[in-house]
Length: 173
Image (cartoon, rainbow, N blue to C red):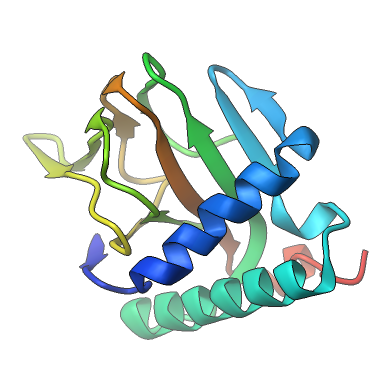
């Protein structure tokens, strides 16, 4: 199942997440040609931490409603996609425990950067970024990728989920 929900996050929430990435970007790590900030594994201000946790918990609750399942967040990142970055088609197989994926778009003031998801072997869903849009799907089942960012930069909130509570992210680590 592929879920798509516009206006999941409000514009001010998206802008605040972008600001949090900017403020804490020195703690981000390079992953291919993008920068990722692991929200649950860095020390940040209490206010920023609380804001991020609330957004992530709300996203997790919505994913559970959309899928009628009980997923647990296992990895949460804010991602910065610079100009010319992209993501080739892939399935999420880095972590065996990952069962589901969500992407929330934080901005749309760039060219390119569309997410493509194979719904089946014959059809590709094209999801253009829109501020606050939530896209979710089984990342192990559906091949997906990102078209090149042609100008400016793209920001996303990415969450990977597991059906196994043993892999639930611990915000007290």
